[in-house]
Structure formats: structure tokens, C-alpha cells
Image 1 (cartoon, helix red, strand yellow):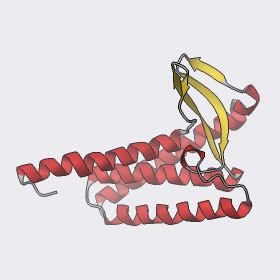
Image 2 (tube, rainbow, N blue to C red):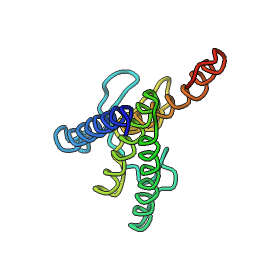
Image 3 (cartoon, one colour):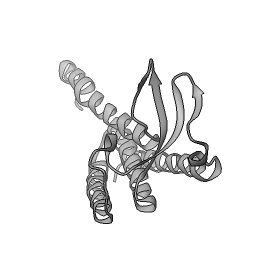
Image 4 (tube, rainbow, N blue to C red):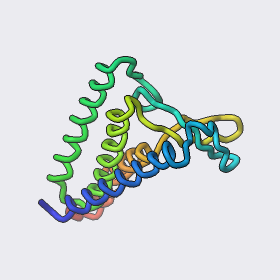
Length: 165
């Protein structure tokens, strides 16, 4: 196992812990469900939404079998990401994979505990409301963005300059 594996693992653990701490506090400390929509800025609110599907509420799980099917699929994907992290030798990829793994595990924990993912962040502007999301979603999007950056920009620069990856 390489140094990037440990670095990515630390990123995954920190991302997971922060995600779960914020969700736990919003549910049980702040009691967001009882408060309804909490207006923080002209473009950002807190509101509790139970997401029974995957991204954007797609494939909403209505039965326990569907919930466990989603858990199973996410577990397989997360295990594949962990294998990738173990084999990886690049630090940027390790950060990206750590964010993806931490976010995936965070949302899977929600699904196991509550039968749905805890979403709470609502961005909006000029009457347009984006979907409600959580920190695990942010970690996943950031991880994908870093992988794309690495694949298309960093990789391209290495080819042009003749550097080894």
C-alpha cells in the first residue's frame, strides 16, 4: 500500500465524519425537521428533505427491498472505489477517491439508518431552486470534478510536456 492510499483514506474518514456530524446535529440537536425551512441568506436555506432515491430523487425506493437494493449497489461501487484507491499512486486521484468514498459511505449510512438520505442544503436564486443536497453530495461532486480535472487537464499537460504521470 502506498502513501496516496493512506492520504485518500484520511480524506474519506474526515469527509464521512463531518457529513455524519452535521446531519446528526441538524436532525437531533438543531431539530431541523420541526423548524421547517430556515432562511440563512437570500440564496441559501436549510430544509429537511428525506431523499428516498439517488441523485435528484431519481429511482425513489418505495419498499424495503428497493432500499436494500440501492444499499447493495452503492456498496459494490464503494468497494470498487476502494480497490482503485489501493492501487492508485497519484495524490490528486487519492484526494478525489477519498471524497467519493467518504460521500458514498455517508449517504449509505443514512439509507441504512433512516431508509432515506438526509438532505438539508437548498440553494436558490431569482425564484429558481436547485435540488436539496447534503455534504456527502458535495464530497461526491468535488471528487468527480477532481477526477475530471486530473484526466483532462493534468493528463493533457503531462502529454504535451512529455512528463511521466
